[in-house]
View 1 (cartoon, rainbow, N blue to C red):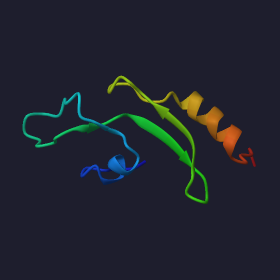
View 2 (view 1 turned 180 degrees about the vertical axis):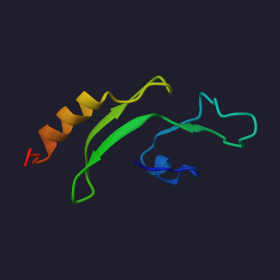
View 3 (view 1 turned 90 degrees about the vertical axis):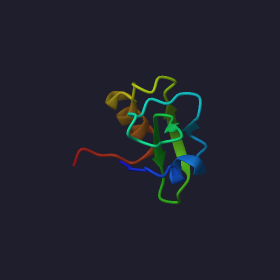
View 4 (view 1 turned 45 degrees about the horizontal axis):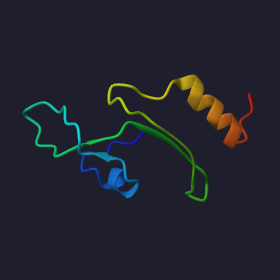
Length: 77
């Protein structure tokens, strides 16, 4: 999990959504990040990414688990 209030990491991955803003009026956010789940390997390389076109939807845990099993050595030890 990552909290990126300044959108620093969001911008590095090109995930800023400037076309839609739904922050409360008290917040001065210029944009919101695109909801995204990224799997990053030990070398810092993105090996899997799931982006959502709907800001209210996130990656289903079963989809993320399947991606983790496909890209990482996961055992039930």
